Length: 458
Image 1 (cartoon, rainbow, N blue to C red):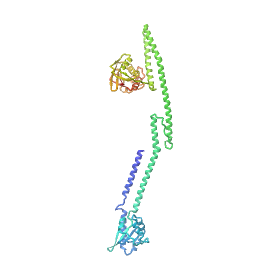
Image 2 (image 1 turned 30 degrees about the vertical axis):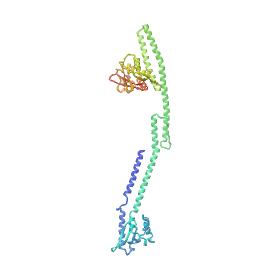
Image 3 (image 1 turned 180 degrees about the vertical axis):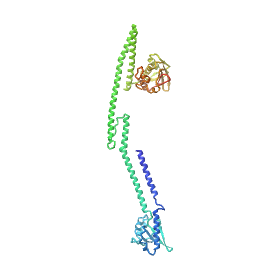
Image 4 (image 1 turned 90 degrees about the vertical axis):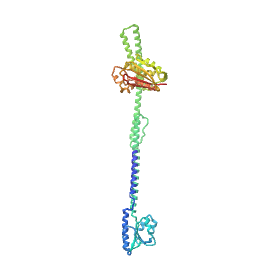
């Protein structure tokens, strides 16, 4: 609509400029054809009067198509033709011309004491000419039309008509624009904004309905759609919540029998070791323990991910000595593959339990997919303690670095491999680091995979 208003305004200005140009262009000038024609008539009248000065009946009754007055040299009126008096009264110099009407009571032949000096003709712009007979100036003949009266009147009304037509067009355009704005553009814009809010998930704000505009029926349909979509979203959210609560409940319930299996395996292994039982039994029991331990890890990851989705994954950060990180690494380094550097003597703000989950998941991934030595280094950078954990296995493809922190994502080279996994380890680790105001950054050096933990200082 802004373009429409700008266009209408521009066209209106151009239209009135054109009318103004027409007014200037049609202003009467010295070479006006109408005035030239009157001058010719004046000369004709003057010649007839001069030729028949002594016989006024020869020219007084002649219709020359123009109104004129004949005066003597002093300006005394000698003759006024039929309609000359009325024209004179309507002229701009009405007071001077009224004397012509009072000059005589006869409409055709008037004489009297009223005077029209030649100066009055000059002042009114009336064409005039001396009357010379036998070399003697006997008076004047003055036309009572300056040659522009009718043309000026026509020109005036044309300009007024064009200006009025332009005003009418501008008003019609403004009314049409107002109609389009209120009945089409504004309702359409409201529908567009409403659709944008629905797309953003803002389903609580209803659409204002107006049955008087062209989109009234659509407005009602759109609002019904919003209400149905809102109810559908609520039902979907409720179902998802129940599903996650079920998974969390099952994950929690699975931990009890798994713990029992592991304890039973430990008791049997200890008993066989005391009795020096067959080696094959010991191997089978150890295998049962490993499988139970794998299931326990998967259940833990699934349980943690479900708690995160439910918004119940709590983190309680406290200020602790960074040396605790070395203890956490030793706790989860079951195979003794870690080569750790010196920990700086600084305070970090972490949740020890959750940091154990982060470091444990990273080391467990290195055990599972690399099986090489693991280098752990520390350095203080700005407001963080950088903890670098690197293995020397196959690593991860460069294009997958931004994906391995996603839920249930496993690298392409491991998706169909024999190594079991849920794709939740790095997702949980990354989520926990964010909750502790830190960051997990995966990198792919020339060999292996490096995970850098940005741990906030106290």
